[in-house]
Image (cartoon, rainbow, N blue to C red; front, side):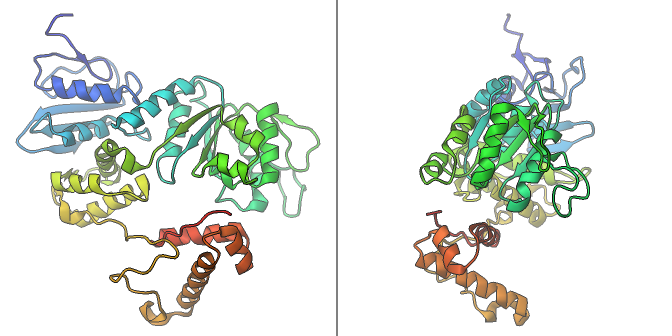
Length: 430
């Protein structure tokens, strides 16, 4: 290869070494190769001829005195930049080139996980993805599905914690007409709906023990028995399970079946908290901007000071919190050409049960509730009772639920509502 040849861009068009964009393209390509399909995106200078072929996305680069993204039609983005060595420019290029719905990453740790996931995609084995809430486990699951031979078949994601316990079995395995009161029609269930494709079981640790035994049989035998049926039905489904708890500890405590754990844990993947992969923050932030700016509206750049603030934040809510912050920043920025420091407003600081209330936080009391509405006062009393029960039980959810006279599942729903309202409750399932 001579010196005028090649940095190969995504999609096959070549940028020469003499091109003013060659260094930037080389850095982008080293990252994008980890998660963009070959031929999905063409990266080239705006002054260079178009590459032959059809691409899902095209990113045209040009030099300018200011950084800017202009979004066109048909997946086209124009990226103007002042300094090819600016990390923000690389982050914006990665976000522009990433296919819709795909992971967006630049941190070496995340890129190594994506490389492993791509190798796993071609293997017909269960996958267990561990990681804190909001780190992108469903996005990684969809990435595995789309890179697998099952890509043309359904991908169905269900959250085991979000389903009523009494309905989870019929929603997974289906039922026959008349199998129980109210079953006026037959239902195929998610396993049969995902036949030939992939079924994601998110928050698998929330699945009741009795149902875990039935799931194990499906994984072992490749068949389901709908409620009310007497004969099993064969299914061809790849199962991906996600957990935000330490499953080995759940097994030791008797809350998760050991045999199911070992059946799922053929090849585990671990997604770290966002604060532990800081190089992902800027590309993800630009990707959030591109996702939430309406088509036809100008796309603001993220300023250097704003990016520095984002990268310094601890992100207790992980990628989900980052998306909230960027949507808020877009609203505050309005028609500004750049998202600056004053537009970055983080979610409210959260506190754990048992911690003293900071001096700058107004204590919860009826006087703080607008209008003192009865429904709000009742909600406040319930919140206080739950926090007090958790404190008195040393953070044990099982003991607190027993003391309150409610099920642990109901308590989990209440705690999830607290988190959404900015109150993080520490505790275990002891």
